[in-house]
Image 1 (spheres, rainbow, N blue to C red):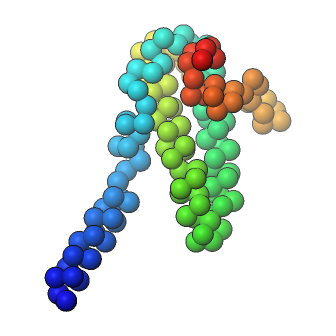
Image 2 (tube, rainbow, N blue to C red; image 1 turned 180 degrees about the vertical axis):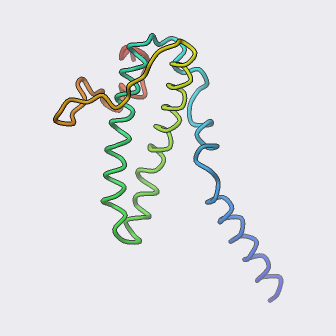
Length: 132
């Protein structure tokens, strides 16, 4: 019985160690390197604006979902992977903007909080200029 308890303890410890992994480290594996190398400054700004807008929407959805333990599970499995990918996209956008000496203003929205020409999920994850 002792070996079984040790085995179960090892499995629980391994699972918890996986949960403790940083999203920042995982982000580097979610996107192709130099994804935005062909973007010019206006395209980088538009992509950053779209990405920040989607991040804000996901944050609101996660906050709504996390009112109970079941909601936390739903939030982590449904919204968190996309949120992590958007974080990786923002890191790459900032890197590309710095390499090209562009100034990103990702929070630029209209007074009503709506981003103009906000792309769909296909546009966010697509090629520059909406080429698919």
